[in-house]
Figure: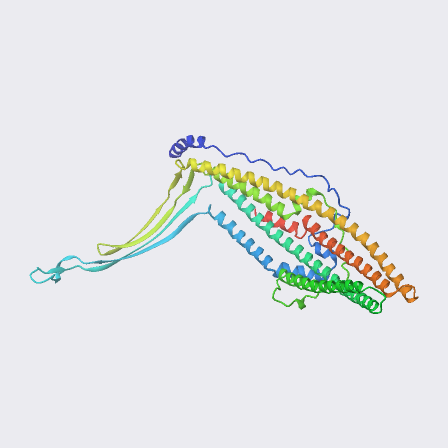
Amino acid sequence: MRRHLIFIAVLPLLASCALGPKVAKPNLTLPTAYESQPTAGPSTTSIDRWWALYNDPQLETLVDQALLNAPDARSALARLRQAKAARSDALSDFWPQGALKGTATRTDTLPIGSSPSFSLGPGTPPISLSNAGVTDSYGVNFDVTWELDVLGGQAVARKRANADLAAAKFDFDASRTTLAASVADQLFQARGLAVQLDDAKVAARLSKDLQTVAQKKADHGLGAQSDADQASAETAQADAQVADLETQIHAAQRTLLVLVGRGAEPVSNLPISDEMIGTPPTIPASVPGQLLARRPDVREAAAQLVSAKGVLKLDELALFPNFTLQPGVGLSTAPVLGTALTTNVWSIGLGVAQPILDMPRLKAEIRAQGARADQAVIAYEKAVQTAYGESDNALVQLGSDETRVRLLTAGETQGLTAYKASQRRYSAGIDDLTTVLTAERTWRTTRTALTGAQVQAMRRSVQAFKALGGGWNTTQLAAETHGAR
């Protein structure tokens, strides 16, 4: 009968609870293919550890060191541990709540009556004390409050907490993916600088040789002094370029050491090869729709959308009555008529709370959270579009870089052929030294341009792997995420 009365009392309030706005579904429409993927390889190739596709032991070692010891990696791991703790805290709100309380009281009784007595002063009657004594009483209480999950709030809270944890995991993997890409990009850039430094030193030597020849011609009246001065200026410029490249290599080595968590070591501990850069590996075939599963930042945005919807649902449930079970047990002992009396007390209660005066505030919060959920939808759509744009641009630019490398490779070959022919003519007495040195400088300039193009292609391939969502184990993460539900 009482249950029926409670239900009848709260029924009008339930009917008056207006739910929040509907959250629109995100628009995830993507093209069926990229506009250009000229280097597409087999789609079965895994890009979880894309840096292994370069067959570069130094690169693999540095990336593994970075993922284990780098400050960015350790900070990302700490954030993930924080997210796991936050999930446990969020779910604990639906567990029984209560505290074990204990009390101990000592009472000193000083009755007024028979002796012993004392006087407040001369001329005042004595005051006597009798039956004085000390009594001790003790008590232990354990009161519990347990919110009854009548409307399914615990399931909603669990789903939201799992979404927050999944978002943190995706952020963790996105951080590691970015770190691996940064290490590879910095290594390739440093190697390119090393090759350019080697070419710059050779160019400086050539400029100095040309300056010597021009000055001798001017001294013997066979050439103008202005030509010698121009050659001297070019030599100074070449020497300055050598000094600048040495500084850039030092900075690149230091940045790379910081990335892998070895920032305090001397740069000599990280040798950079000045050999040719090589060619990037073939990018596996991919379609834009795979970005929804492969890109950790896209999946993070999807998890944040689920979390925002969960918060909105919890805000809506706050409009409904809250039922709590309130059991309690207590134990106390106290002196009664000179005898210690021990009592046991237990109780059981049911509490019902219906927000009345808080209704305007709760409904305003629902509208605000609805707007935040809409923002999460838009953020998800933006993440998907950004992922597609970055992937398409990286593939197109990589294709352009590879074309540029082919053209410059042919030009470098022609420049080397012309330089060797000039050497033969000089040996035969047909060309002078100036012609030979000029031909060599032309070849070296083309070779420097080729090196720059090769480095750019390698760095662009790193961007392509990152844009396609490589660098983390999607299968393992999916299993971990499913296990957390």
